[in-house]
Image 1 (cartoon, rainbow, N blue to C red):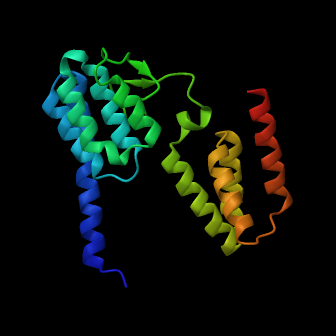
Image 2 (image 1 turned 180 degrees about the vertical axis):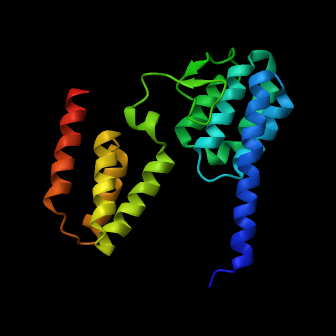
Amino acid sequence: MTDPAHTTGEAARLLAARRAVRRLARHLLRNPHDAGAHMARLQASLELAGAEPVQGALADLFTSFGADSEQLKRSALHLCHDRLSAHAARWFEAQVVQAALPAINSLATRWSVLAHPCANISSRARRCSVDDSRLLAEQAVLAFKAGNQAAQNEFLHHCVVCLDNLAFMLARRALLKSGAVLPDDWAAVSLQLEQTQEFS
């Protein structure tokens, strides 16, 4: 059984981390070259779930500092390396000794405030992160097993509108693996996403 005090403490810790991330982001908008604030924001981002907050903060740091700040960039990357996806970690590693990233780059996320995601990032990635897609897929599987048609419809609508192939594929694969027989609306969304991918 979950300890209510632990749950309350965890919620308070997450709220404090979110507030710290926001406060430091506002500070960095005014002082983009404050290395201490960048590192503090990275630390606070590590308290949050998923990789996107950390990658967004790291992208801001790499956008603010160039080759002459190699040690700072290397320290920042080392701090959060294990939280990043393997390909993102490799991209950042390749940038450590390079000039500052341009303001629009492929490493920025929705959590970045100094950097902005470039247009060649997929529609899904601009609208929701990998973490979001995984969470939505898990929720969709639970909704299917519970027979919650409204939640399933909302999930399928999200997949079509946001072109979230990842969430749809993860949920579909998990359901088929469990032996579920998917109804026609799932097949229709699958076809629609395939066609959209072909013409994108």
